[in-house]
Length: 495
Image 1: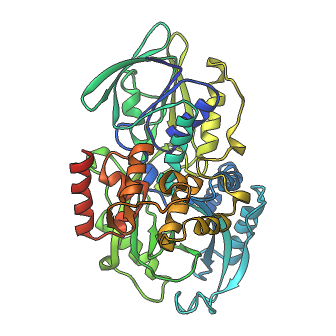
Image 2: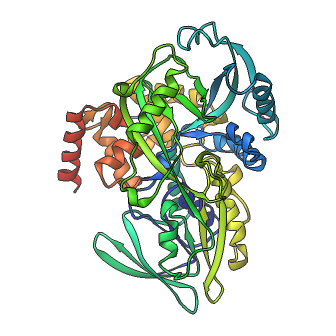
Image 3: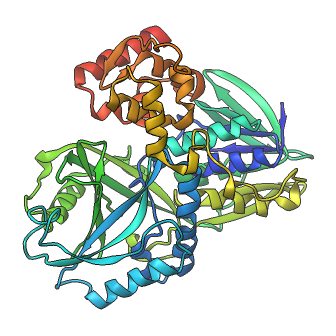
């Protein structure tokens, strides 16, 4: 089989590029060794944001581009992306108030904000913050960013790419890459079967493994440099009511977020720790758990400790090494590096990047590859909607109310979750509403067989974990008995 573009890696960058390339008329093959978003892209803080703290490192271009993307992303998928207000307490012992005001003024104005409300000062000794934060915090600031279901965004990119003709293959490893007279030849392996494909160009978007993939064709040391930084998060039972989140400053000059998560929980993160593959599997350390608990306890009236942590996760950010000594200061901007190993055929490696700028990275990558291909269209993704995102006026509540009228017999909490997860594609699961949907076996926490079948048939789910921890976060709500039973059912029934 011959393709225009082979993309190696099914995280946020690889799927964004596959989507953009397929929309330009290229014949695309994306290979992901594991599941979509199975590593870094499902281990984020789950924000579409400009990165307020990056202003301190003079990353003005990065922040400006990210801020511009917030509203582009919000319009494209209002079911999995929504506005969130962030509360930043003023602490007399840390950054001065004038610095916070200046930073927020820049944050409000350098990104061309249109839809999101601007920042403002607020009193913290009144509801809803009184009694939640320590009494020493009297004033603070509030500003806007957005929340995103990160792993679902990756899946939506992949769905849109497939809808436009891309071949998306998960559990498929690229074993080798060789230069040919017309491009590249690659051996790929899926479930023990090895296949050889040819392609006119390759995108290496393997994240932390970008150098490993590059080593399949390049024997000399890569001039670009990858900096691996581990970020870890903890989840506790809900620490406060409300839809707002908190941004806390630390004495070490870092910041952490405390964010409402999955209705009943609070997400706290993140850390920045140098990482090396010799350390083994990526996981949070006891030191990181203690650090996050201590940092949050500096602000919350009721302290938390490691025994309050009900779940945790960690991911490795594949950052471009700008030689910063502090892992927190390493640039989050991306670098696109093109080399030619075969008669002018492109081999594009991706370093760095953020979920917020993933669409723009995909567009930028295709601009850099434009001299190698003839596209059927120019830049197109800025105004395009993602699958399920075609809500009237991008109004989720209006959409939910319409679906409530259609599926009245359904539990409201279940219906709201399905509306958020699938948007207008909910009809592919529940039908058009003319008949009561047969949900099938219930596995716990509102996970039914009908939804499981959809995820297997339409969203590349091939394991119980794919469904419990990436297509949804229902594993957090299920008991150990329910998780074990679902896994056994999946392995026995689906194989």
